[in-house]
Image (cartoon, rainbow, N blue to C red; front, side, top):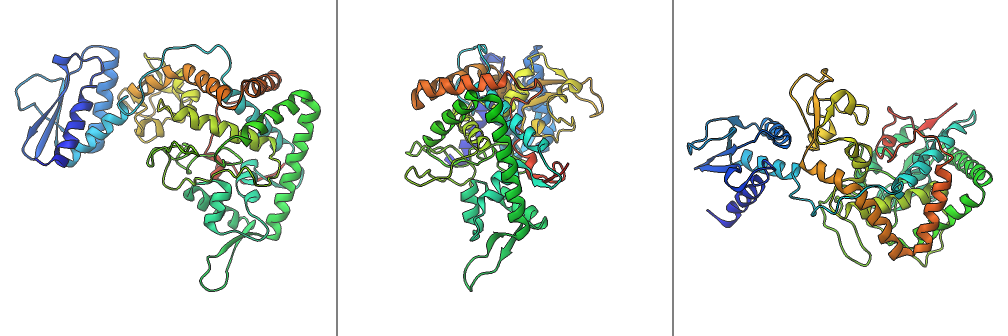
Length: 452
């Protein structure tokens, strides 16, 4: 067997040690090799975590098309699956993805002593966005996300597709979708250029007018906040501007996911992080890395842009620790106990279909007891990696805030927190703890054009 052939088997054996997570050395699961076929024999104990692991193993077996069998080595097993080479490789890959194997070591357990900075930033951004939308006049204005991430990124001279992606700091898949929608709305147009040059994206007359109306609405809300919150607003904006000026990379003016079906800000870990300078996060191949030019004369950023860029940097720093997605943890995982919750209850936090096709099921964040999607009493459990993400959350958000105090200055970060806490005390209690980073790309879910 070649070294390349044995490498995936070594990884599979390494992963099987984690299934079940409660297994002792003599009772762990095993791989049985039989020529061109493979058997994965699992042994589960009568514990809650073993039950969850068994559900995940069964889910993966169905996904890769493995069939149950009796283990050919004659040793006992709770369940055994026969696979061909490709099925066995995929089985191992999914098992590793559902486990903690690809994550960092768990940090110390901690409790939230104060509202996480990421939550305060999210509340402020969400409240501002709500007020922007409620301040719409009888004339339509673009959603704040589209205004910030699309229309404001197109100069009057026009811009190529690639230049637009860098100016807006949007992944290619997102940029194509939102530009197409704006073209359909008559706000943007594709202009042909001289032979050999790429076509340009430009604002139409209507697009220019609607951008102006959106900017006027944005400034009106900022003026209202300045009057309402007085010194807290000024201190907040000053603290945010100082922080953002020290960031090494350009970031979107409204926090956004990688694509319509990917809430991750930079698109995952396909490309590794770079220590720099500048420090570059792990990312998908389409996420543009744009170094911030400190000597460049810059326009002052709006409050939502400052909030978004600061929140985005916080998320990037949090997820660099490889202890789970901040958004998923804040919105759902922290509320999901070891003993699970009913599917009906889980759906109050996230859109979980129960048919294996929703995000949390496909990405193996949860395991669900067998049954029909309509059965809301089925139990939903956190998998191995989700339990680690949940348990690391309180320590991680506190750790990033401390890290920022060392990097950007204790006074700046302290002033930022104080200002956000003052504003937060005046906000409504039903604001999300993390923004939806993909819905703005989907006009059938949330129209680009707002009217009242």
